[in-house]
Length: 202
Ligand SMILES: Nc1ncnc2c1ncn2[C@@H]1O[C@H](COP(=O)(O)OP(=O)(O)OP(=O)(O)O)[C@@H](O)[C@H]1O
Ligand SMILES: [Mg+2]
Image (tube, rainbow, N blue to C red; front, side):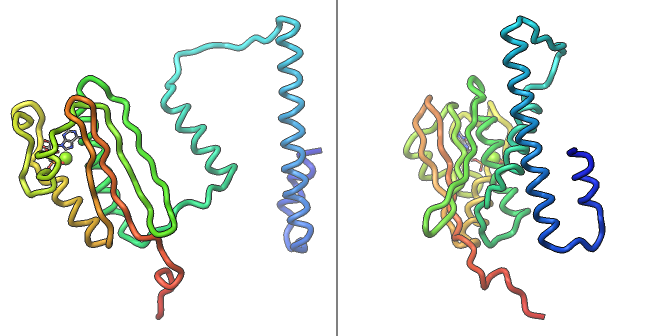
């Protein structure tokens, strides 16, 4: 049945109503299929007959794939800002690289993005070596590196300086909250996009 309905999706010049009914029918069939599969699994478990092969697999890839799938399924609206994608990627990659570099013992890193009424906020949290209050006030300066980091970790001390300038240029702010030996949270804000910013006049 699903096959026939899916074939209908390829018929050209269908009225708009029909296309929407077909997508709805396909979605219902998928849900039904999922339900049946689950019931079958449940009864196999009861009968002690749920069998599957095992193999060495990459769990990180699997988790990423599930996140991608759910993003498609639930069509998250996403947070819209007005900016330069390459430059913002440069900022975020520097924060992630720093989080990895300065967390020799604990590699768990949490990256998140959220928005409130006025702005979007991206944060990178690590549970690494952290830094003192004095260093927190200086790390966005050009070539500043925390004492002792020069010898232990490669770097120029310009990543955060450049990041702060890029964020400033976007009308946002970058900041750090950190505790020595406990970890750091770097956050930057960006103004949310408004409709006029996306419209171009030719
Ligand atoms: N997550 C972090 N935890 C602890 N210290 C950090 C962290 N991120 C940055 N720092 C400190 O701030 C300094 C400045 O960071 P910045 O990214 O500007 O330079 P870098 O990583 O040393 O070199 P690069 O120019 O290659 O980015 C670092 O040298 C380090 O001392
Ligand atoms: Mg860096």
